[in-house]
Length: 283
Image (tube, rainbow, N blue to C red; front, side, top):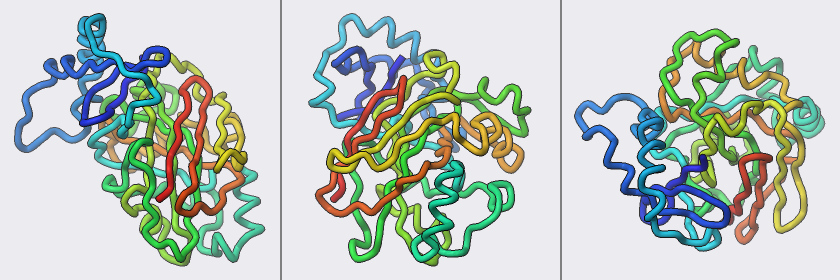
């Protein structure tokens, strides 16, 4: 099932070339309370919502995908986690361009650790990226996004995929420079997720997905998740040994070689096998 948020915070079911407005399914969510439970309420109750979506889809209004303005498929993650330099060719790329990537981040992923992006940076494909410092270099980093489905706290690697709600396309945008990585990646609109969530049952093997990114029609990044240094299962399990993962938390699993600068007016076209495609404008 492909589930999205679109338009004016409407819940959508993606079928073929259409988005069905299934916002009526939100009635099964528990009433808000204070303090709110940690995590995203839709993702935490995804099984109930999916069943209700099936009930309301037949009478739902349809709009063409091309006319939909997609928001992030997760509205309120408790955290966005990034995995640094998780493809060997990107490691080599960074080593060859120390003037761009600096000397601050060297060593294995385990030595560097995972990093966090501010949740306020999160946007959907239809909202676009707004360059905060147009005089400095901002790069695209195309990644597979993992959306956690239930509380994962110090879990074994062998069971890690049991905790996944679904997958999405992710863009880990970054301003290059000497500051801390999390600082430069937490600018508003610098965390793009979308265009929808594909539920985990549709992607039983996320470790073999082809993906690509083009800027204005020119391919810049292209690889396969099979070339990750740290596997998806290891990323989830290792993260959970440091802090609990809550429903809706997003892990951006690392980028491949080919990162490059974007400027206002550019359009990034992103595709991941079994998930789909999205166009993201740079402003």
